[in-house]
Length: 177
Image (cartoon, rainbow, N blue to C red; front, side, top):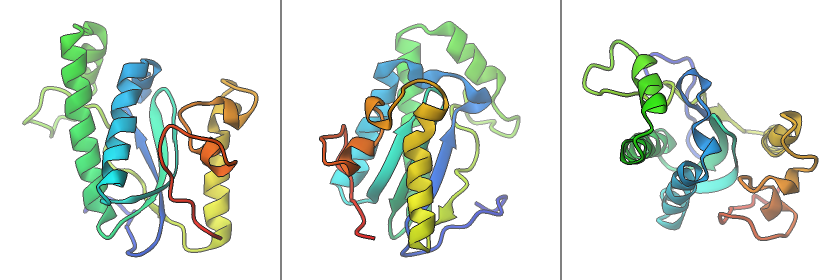
């Protein structure tokens, strides 16, 4: 993270944003969104990080997570999901998306043909209860603000249901605040 002004603080949950290059709508395909869900579930199940909230939109995702080395876990997450999604796009012969991922690849990325994620995740440490609640509400209302649903509970790719006592797609570590 040497090129970034954003830093991870130990022992704090962080709000992170991971964005697809050129805001391409990769996650409008449910099978590709499922790769993200499976990866988040793996990290959580294997106690590599605590997942406190998330939303997956068509071209980005927001998460609130904490870990001993969150920077490393997010880097691994982005690397693994990029490889998995690009492999799946190749299998499906999704030439348009692959061409876009190649075209928008940063020039210094010389060891790869494609770039899925924009660089960085812009971590924001949530050191106060008020900050945590604000970011969680931001995450959960993202699909409503975009006009995709009328209520946050109607968006299936979100932790909102977990917070209202319903079953969500992933297990969430709800913070007692």
